[in-house]
Image 1: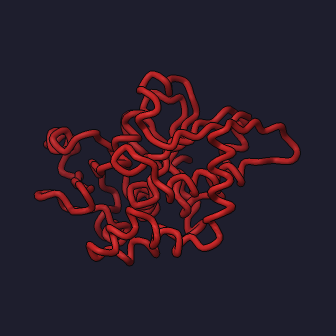
Image 2: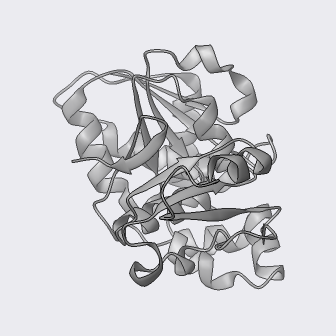
Image 3: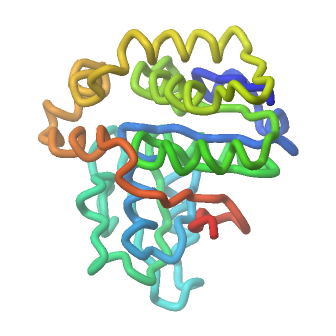
Length: 240
């Protein structure tokens, strides 16, 4: 198994992911929100690359069982039912619903990796279950950090490093690229207190300033669910 990490979506184009097994990470907050929504019974999450396409896609094709969710620069988009806080995606609101989802970083990264043979979503919330599944596949993996407006994001990179750490198996040969070694080093340096890490990151501080500190606590929970979002038919669904 060869593990590679891309620290920003700008490092590769769509065709780079063709046929690959890819894991997309956007700790603050798209990954955590998507995982929470599916844990709480959402039928599927349809990630989109633009707000305009989100509105277009949601226009009745799901038979009235559709919600628009997401954010632009941390704020809920006007006309959307939901923002990008995991706490909004409760069972009462999302159970059985299709959610068309846009976010500044995460949904765009997912769309970019849509040609992957296997595409999963990772956060601290589902780390152990996802690592266990990837080990069972025993295939090369590209870990894609969504970043922060196409720039490096410490929280995504530390999460990638935690996944690399989980995937290292003494019984199997695991090849690490320079990037995956770097992510692993970041996890070992910054991963001892995830909530503290999130509070001190650039994006974490912006979220606190905008009143979303509780989201950091939700996003910092490790292994709070075993749900693995899997991309199939243009939507993310729970891997069975």
